[in-house]
Length: 107
Image 1 (tube, rainbow, N blue to C red):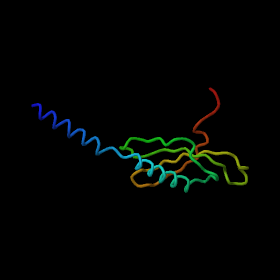
Image 2 (cartoon, rainbow, N blue to C red):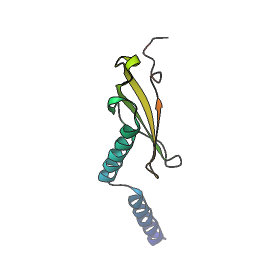
Image 3 (tube, helix red, strand yellow):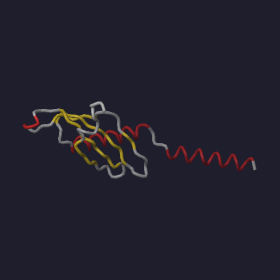
Image 4 (spheres, rainbow, N blue to C red):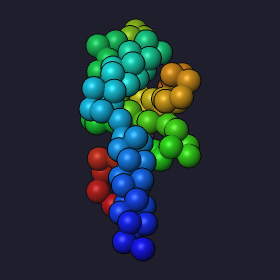
């Protein structure tokens, strides 16, 4: 009975370590995400405006807020925000304007 418990514990530990990704893999994925998001952005001087928000693997998406300046003349170089949703499995990014995502006004 004791040997079964040891075997079970060993298998669980091996399975858990096999699922974990090394930090380098996450860093590389973050680089790919930032490149895909900034490439699609309609803002100039675009950069990440915070840390990525990782959704569970069932959804497989990471969200990232971007900030920059609107390039259109009528926008007069106004600051803007975009929300990028990045599909980790495919490497595809989707962008939407997100100026109203965070409302600075108090209720």
